[in-house]
Length: 384
Image 1 (tube, rainbow, N blue to C red):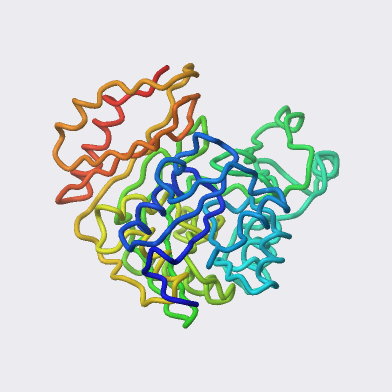
Image 2 (cartoon, rainbow, N blue to C red):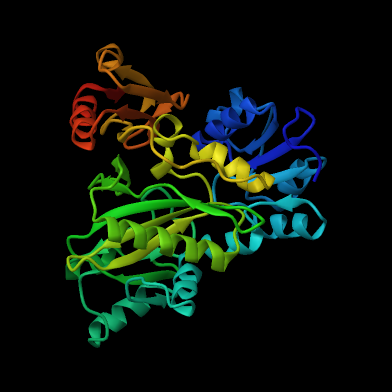
């Protein structure tokens, strides 16, 4: 691969949402030219990429045409056309993370089987083709409530996940290939982001603690570092490295964990790219997750993952009951709070629980960061 830190180097990114936008910003600091493919003409990265191409990253021919002349391809979403990136790899174009990793991770069923095969800790599960099969297992006593149903494909940002707690919920099951997971009661959710380059160098960011919106089932806020035992934090980092090493992934891997009431660590799911749980690193760590991803796919040493300061991060979500041209309320009041760093993604239309931006809150202690984050959540509103 030729010199990467050069405007002559062409990095292709499949997906132009907020992750693509922030990846372009990191690449710009290194004078790397970015080419972004996304179906939305107003995608977050459309105004910042060196070249933006409107088109579907799920379409084989569109991806193949987009990649022509580019030096390296990466992704900001797993739902890309897998056959296209596999073909590009066969043609000698570097694709990181590798298509073999994307194929496993994009399918939550294959993910689970991968953990089982490698004896990695995860909740019990079973795979089903349709809702009828699940109902039959419940009827004959082989499956008991509560449990979690996850679509094998296409689940994203809390979509495609359904917690079944009562018999009437069975009529609302997804009628498509899915996995059924044991429900982990009163679980604490944490995440660890690990980077791995082609030489096998790996480095983890400290674990973050996640709080989910109960309606949208997506991360509403996180705290860094997580308020967990040091031994448990080290165990989470070690498991994250094991997954990355067994996948032989090149790039970032975000690993979400559940911690049950007994303190047992269970892998929930992973993402092979920059991740919502790493947004805070832009301001709070020596190396942002976006620079770290570039270091890994370019073959450079990982940057320091040490924290400069404790931090909280909140997702700025579209307000419930609001759809249409976005209006942000409370911006000036939020910006007068010390340590608040706003990132607005540039999405012109809001809808309930859509990710419109995020705010990182820096403070001297995790408790102070959390307190400020709660104020920001109360003040900042996204309406139409």
